[in-house]
Amino acid sequence: MTTDAVLELRGVGRVHGDGATAVHALRAISLTLRTGELIAVMGPSGSGKSTLLHLAGGLDTPSEGAVLVEGTDLATLSRGQLAAVRRRSLGYVFQDLNLIPALTAAENVALPRELDGVRARAARREALDALAEVGVGDLADRFPDEMSGGQQQRVAIARALIGPRRLVLADEPTGALDSQTGEDVLRVLRARCDAGASGLLVTHEARHAAWADRVVFLRDGALVDDTGVAPPPEVLLTADGFG
Amino acid sequence: MYGYQLRHEFERSTGATWPLNVGQVYTTLARLERDGLVEQTGESDEEGKVVYRLTDAGHAELTGWFATPLGGNDRPRDELAIKVALALTTPDVDVRAVLQTQRTATLRHLQELTRLKAVADGSEDTAWLLVLDSMIFRAEAEVRWLDHSETRLARLATAPRPTSAGPAPGSAAGPAAPPAVATDPASDSDQAVRR
Ligand SMILES: Nc1ncnc2c1ncn2[C@@H]1O[C@H](COP(=O)(O)OP(=O)(O)O)[C@@H](O)[C@H]1O
Ligand SMILES: [Mg+2]
Image (cartoon, rainbow over all chains, first blue to last red; front, top):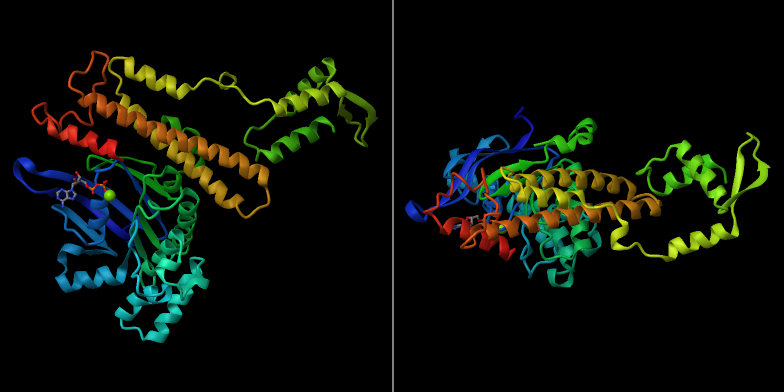
């Protein structure tokens, strides 16, 4: 069943510091993200959401357990290999500061492909396609400060999923947007997952989390509940008997 | 219009969210006729169905209905608020578990509604979209209230002198936070407040 697992966390824990001052940012997290799936992570501030995303993206190392990206345990990789996986398999979208201000939208999106070794013309062509897919094809030659927040986040999603990248990790991508613009960004993320990408999304807005296939809840570093994977209708009818 | 048509119209504009049975429609029509708000036109359609129309009094009643806002007390009582309030004051009930179970169920409902909205978005069915939006906003408000309640309880739990009615956060905080480690739950609730 792990064949289509894009991301897998196995018993992952993360402790900051040690002894009396140790902070258990995450405890025994197990979670599988499959192809085409969008999972939302909710929880109070400080519950470990960003730590979870950093571990999933290989930006941080677990104190216990394992993180597997497309079947590869990140702990088995050399620094160089890890950097390659981070660059080729994953894309990140944060609350803000996603784009390089001195580059146009198309240049921002093409950049990862040029780093992959794709020639500039081909990379630009891919970037234009990717921008069109997230509904901002007409903004290719604008600079970030000439775009609205929602448009910038769409560009960031296009960049996160350019080329072979299939996994987007998004930490409060709608945090700086008004509710309707945030909703539009979620629609784009949903559409990209329906088209075969996978997403792990941190949000504190229930209305945005509801676009996900599955919503998990963190509290004090532990997964405390889960809406489950797309329940069949008969389960929905008796939802109050759940948990 | 006749009864079956009325039911169809109602369900069309509300996305069949509140299904009516046709018997309900006919007993309501009979009562409206008794009260002089509708009358039979005297004609019947080709299938022999009785056709009704509004009387002048019926028009006035309808206009008044649209013009009058709902009062706070016109709505059904809030069973969830009652449940949480009772969970807090009933011994041996873990109110945080009640909140979390509800949050998950409400999120699941919100996911369902969002899927319906994604389908309806492309359509021209504005009445149905408005009904859906209403249900989505209500579910969202419920989640916000649940979050808020949890934060309020966390603050109470770490207040210096909880009263006897105070919640005993059972499984979640229990074993991980022995009384000696006073800073742990405290910093936690600070973070909850900050958000
Ligand atoms: N580098 C760090 N050093 C020490 N503690 C940290 C560090 N990063 C995060 N933490 C702590 O780990 C916990 C989880 O943080 P975080 O993952 O940022 O939560 P969230 O994103 O849900 O707000 C918090 O208590 C935070 O203070
Ligand atoms: Mg965070």
